Image 1 (cartoon, helix red, strand yellow):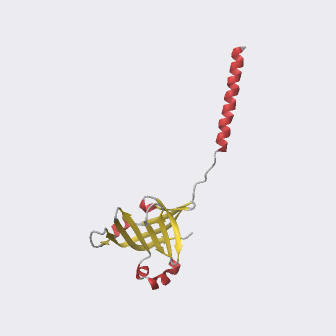
Image 2 (cartoon, helix red, strand yellow):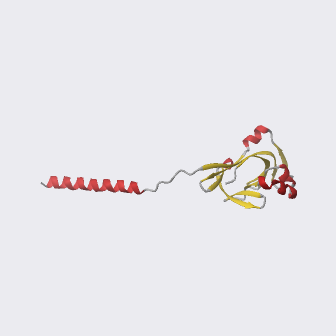
Image 3 (tube, helix red, strand yellow):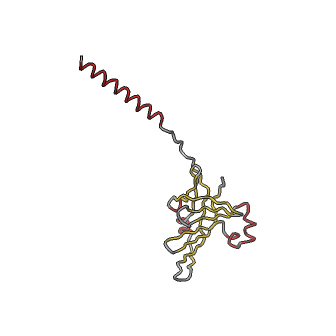
Length: 156
């Protein structure tokens, strides 16, 4: 009799634990997969490198080299990421004729000329007439700046 009561208790405990585990799993939040959207793709045409120890260097980019340095910004859910630069999160800042995506942890950024306001921007800035975006990257105390053309810009 002792064995059957002990076994019945063990079975009851297993059922309770089993139902508790099932209950806990049923309560886990279900996170829908975030929608991913490519917001911007740019291809650099030229660039500069400056370290402060010598004159700025003009970087002439072949088409093959430019493709390796493309600039890509995506949106996952409600956050933006600079996927062409190690997928760093960036914040979107809209001001005047420009849309800026600034890294949260460093002063690096991508600034895009709003296509709807390009003509106005070009009146104030010769570079805005010639290029669609600028990408500024710092590596230690060296600054790299690329100027290029938009391949795709899809505002949200």
